Length: 560
Image: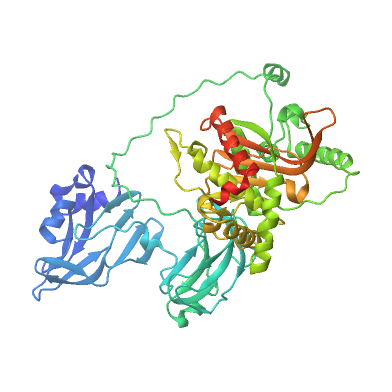
């Protein structure tokens, strides 16, 4: 029988409330009037009769006593408001005082193994707010790692542009964040001061939402966060409704067992040959190092595997690996964030997208002639030179407008066909592979395309691309012919797109004429279209390549 039940049983005034706590969660309160006494009742009764356990005095004020401590309250129009309320959590070990919010209060009084848990009916519950370890800190804002791209799950801090103690205003750059695509500037949203930088320059693998800095409103509050540490505890669980109390159950006495006959060690071992004995520490060590216990011979009593057996096994395997790799010289290069994401996306593409490939040779003599004429005009006007890749981008965009089925994405339940023709261009840098996008390439002139490609390629090499520079593509072009001389290759589709064009180098070939001694030379360029067979059927892909080849071999049609 608990202490609370004894109080109820021996109280003269509460003789009829002996089983109140066994029928419904109750509130235990103590109030004083002319004849002080202890009041215990059901939650609804207390709320109805005493307005959350408050007892009105003659002067209109009320006193509430929780755990025997008085708190002053005022009463206005039948409502009770608590000005200064401290809740005490009483356990069998002592008394713990915690301040809680005025608006939301939870009263929990577990006493000697039996809990009295109820919410004051005139207040809202604030789960675990009273146990906050930062209640003594001034108002502050925790800045988390933002999600700067749709595929971003973690990022790195490249460098901080603001230091601790600096004042920040909305729109100012706090730091540079390395995302899965590029390095992006993170701007401040509110005015204040940087009180604490949690993750410094070069911090890696920071999960989205993880706290990276603390800002405060007042400059005088900065010093209070000098030793601030982010709590790693799991978020407080929601407070559940009080469960119905259960009556104490008497423990059943275990029946007296008959003494077991003694078995010799030899017999015991023979019956347990199929079992493997090991100490808990040995099992834990083997589990941490992925060591199968069946491969280890125990040296303990009756073949028991000990910790020393695991350590000897690990030492012997380490020596073997060291001997095998002794002749190799190597260096481990850490993967950048963009390389990790590129690897995962390309692996996902090859595993989930049914690729097929179509290759065609296109004659580029007239294309090279047109390019020479246009570059002469560009040099005269001070514009950027036009490359073969710029002409390929324009031809691919016009072919997509002519065959819109290739400008689509697989969406499981439907195929989404885009009205905009946005071409991603693969750019190789020291930091990895980037694919900046040329938007509405079918509507732009060759001069505009050339300027945008060079500008975005430089930003990719400087690792300064923003999400708007590479998101929203509907088709991709990868050229390894011009810069590297690759004759022909097959590219991997960049999801959620359904096609990518791999461009090889141009080479001169002999073209037979009508007679045996008649021939001519021509320059041909091989291109390979990678298609998602879920979206682009073989005939549709061939139709697109036919349109593309027509624009390349008759380039003046692209100017119309």
